[in-house]
Image (cartoon, rainbow, N blue to C red; front, side):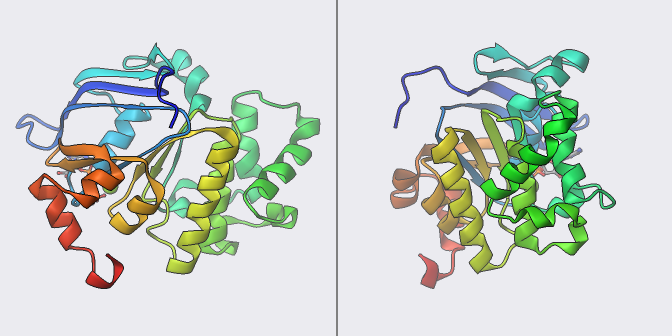
Length: 258
Ligand SMILES: Nc1ncnc2c1ncn2[C@@H]1O[C@H](COP(=O)(O)OP(=O)(O)OP(=O)(O)O)[C@@H](O)[C@H]1O
Ligand SMILES: [Mg+2]
């Protein structure tokens, strides 16, 4: 692990409250994520995982605390300034169908980030998109398909290809394989690992599946009611859990999978 550089993502004392009572949300979250690393965020349903992902992606505004991306303070970026750095961090959702325009074929889906960020002349789109499909193990012939005409695994590959178009430093993955069959799950996780090895992206990996987390992530944090209950290397946290919240998650894993 190569931790001496500055972190790709640095979160400090992040807090988010919903509504007046301020019970839900996030409280005092701090962590750093380095190039080539995967940090898993686990926790029971409602513990704040997606809330954290949305804050990191600047899709919602934090109450307090700061978010630095490659040393730049992006906590309060808005409008054009935010749009300009959007390509540096991308997100892959659990359900790509909900994240795709259902009427756009794969070619248009993959062109969108190129247009938005002015990344290639339109004459080069065909070649760039062909290469992007190949990188995620799809044939160029799929470019004409609509999202509904793809399998779940193919769809998630397109979502990953789209996220990679801007060569992001950070990819936030919110339950990226939970909706997939077990066999396809392993293929997609292996693809993500291969891509990370090639490009050195940092992954913030949200999951409730500890078997997947163990295989996929270097470090992990356990959220409980919006707070970090425990954090550390995946081996340490899962091998010798200290927090009750971690033990509850481990006990929920079917015995055969442990
Ligand atoms: N926009 C919102 N307004 C009010 N409350 C919200 C909002 N978004 C999330 N919450 C609340 O914040 C808490 C954390 O929700 P979040 O979606 O982050 O959980 P999660 O860990 O992603 O859960 P799951 O595993 O079910 O996806 C929950 O109590 C939720 O009801
Ligand atoms: Mg969620």
